[in-house]
Length: 145
Image (cartoon, rainbow, N blue to C red; front, side, top):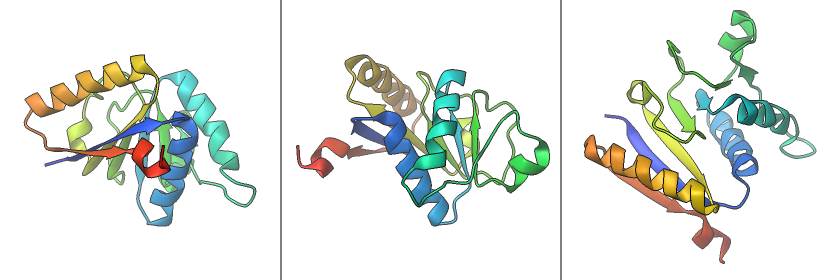
């Protein structure tokens, strides 16, 4: 069964996701990120400059197939028929991604924005209704705030 984790309290959702992806790629993971087209475009830019010395190799859904197949991170607004090798799904969208259960692991990144938190609570309830056990990571506590 798919492992689910919610990362609550990201002060900057995109910056946090960039760091999360850098760590995942460093650990050898193949990751798909699903978000609306605007967020995909901003994340694409953000991954080019995670830090002055870091670049997270990635591609977008519109890239040619050979580029997509060589990229450990794929940014997409539609999971569609996305096939392996992606084991991890990061959801930056407002709803449950269709086909999330094809992945070994799903990570939901949630900002401090009240509307984003409310939408995340709805996704949490839906996952729980489907019988999934969810792990909560409170990023606010990790920052020491």
